[in-house]
Image (cartoon, rainbow, N blue to C red; front, side):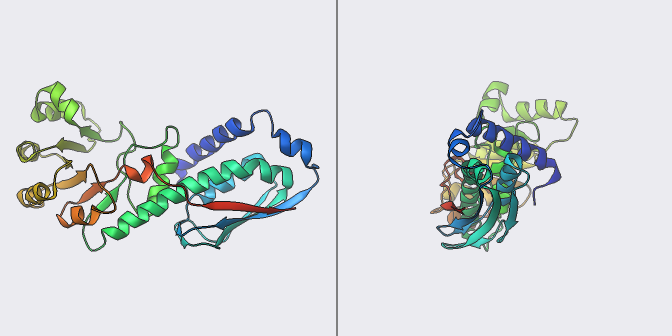
Length: 281
């Protein structure tokens, strides 16, 4: 279910995508198909994964033609495999063909993200590590990318630059020190946003810990240094591992005892899940 606060962004994203694709009109469908011709279709999964984005795909058809009927057969978040039919549509054939590509673009991308997120979550089962996404999303589609991450079972990091303070290496260099950067942020933080500090070594870790920040990000640390960081912190603050995380090494990273692991690959280079819309008139 799309959250109320996300629904407007979904509607707007769909409207932009349709304006981009249909423009002044789907000339092929309008010129080739009789307007009264009806049709129906089903969304067919062709590989194993996690389905996500069905409500977004349904919104595409709704905006193209409110008279198109939509029926979800397998809900978002479900594991699917080749041959599974996740939804059905019926209505004017012109409308179905005009909506097809945009609906599939959203559905395939979101399902690809959810599928990869699920694999990361399963890889760290048995540890306390929470898999997080990043801001490495498609411009204009962050709400959908992060929704897909949640559907896959992972969690969202900050949405943007406005809802969390994340002091990184460039901020520290410009401010002069971690302490200076944190103190300046706190002087303006009337909303009491959480403050996270990125560190690259154990000396920086000690400085950040002494300042009582909410979370410390261990940037591109090797496994042994991460283990030492976890031992040193001893549960006094959340620790997030970031940088170079893959499916091959995420279990080892989680085993160090960090509380969070952020994975840019969840959204920046995801492979779309193979899904087609099979139509008949």
